[in-house]
Length: 158
Image 1 (tube, rainbow, N blue to C red):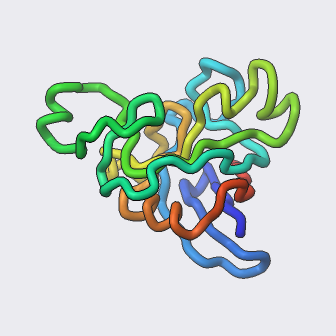
Image 2: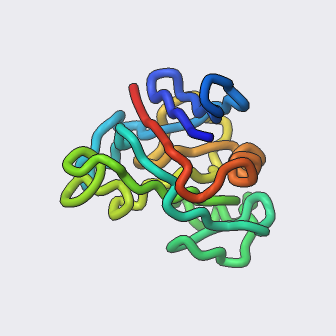
């Protein structure tokens, strides 16, 4: 299996060679595509799902520093922490595979903490709205998480 993320179409497709399995709306970086650290852009190129975090957590589980807080996202939390970039439900932590493009130095996707994760802002899926990560609907990221394995190739392109 492999994942293809099309930044122009704001879609994520899960495929086996030559056969699409699922297609999801996503939200990538509001600042567009880019690989530099601190750019708040979504990196392009070939990646792998290096770590998969959140197995067994409920839909809407809140993560800080890749650890579940024990909270479930709700309107009270949203009011208590306005402007927070919510990382919910599951995390697929991406590792770049192309040295100089998305791996090592100032372009290292893993050191930039680039994830595929659930979001509190599902209404904006289909439009760029993230700080660099790839956001998905919570029920869809949970489904994707169950379908792929660590090391799954992830191609991000415009």
